[in-house]
Image (cartoon, rainbow, N blue to C red; front, side, top):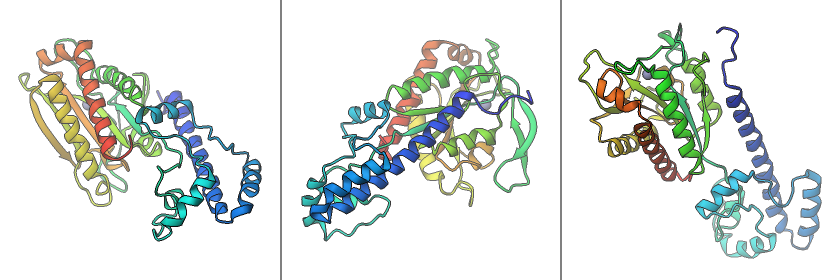
Length: 333
Ligand SMILES: [Zn+2]
């Protein structure tokens, strides 16, 4: 266990890809901002622009990844950041009264009549299938700088009727959720795709932070001493100053959407939402985060239901729909 890498190779590769793509987008934005600036110079523009683009080896047509182009087509947005400088020049004259409000989006400030030609990025959802093959009872702080510590990752519950370990159930549902989100143009990073890994709750959340996730979904199932307890609820971070005050609002909104979608899709008992201040995976998060508890594995009926691919698919589809709704509300899809 100890010599295992803390991350899936696939997760690491995806994070590296995201970093490379962000760097490329930054270069494209810089290059395009420079082109717009040069347009002000009139006759010199074209010569300067062509010189510039050959210098920087940034092609005039952006080499956006094919997947990004698909999203853009689906949303009807033009993926091309290359509005001709001439158009920009003529559009600028009447808009000079509009003071540019941001320096990071010089393109929007320049041509407000047209859709922003800046390269768009796909929204990113990080999915964390709770637990893993074997728990790790060594501890880590429940929040940055905290002296309170909790197990790095607990072993989770298991199905009272089927014997299915929670980690296995939520991994299967998470993979369905990943597929459903990818089909809707969302970039997905999984914290794990196997049971055979040891990765703490802080490490999982660091993946979400590193990916700059638009939403971080931690999929879990419940257990109770009372076998008649059943239903679905969604946890989200309570406001803890310095830890979660910046993400609590959007997290709660995502939780509301997820809970409503899950209940509508499954007709399970509605246990509502829970704001939690004691969860490591929330307190370390810099991005909106929710934790759906998709049912009680200690309830024989619900455990059997959760073992069927049909019910798992319903849950995955509901969570994907809620995530898409959330991303749309946030202007990311
Ligand atoms: Zn759990």
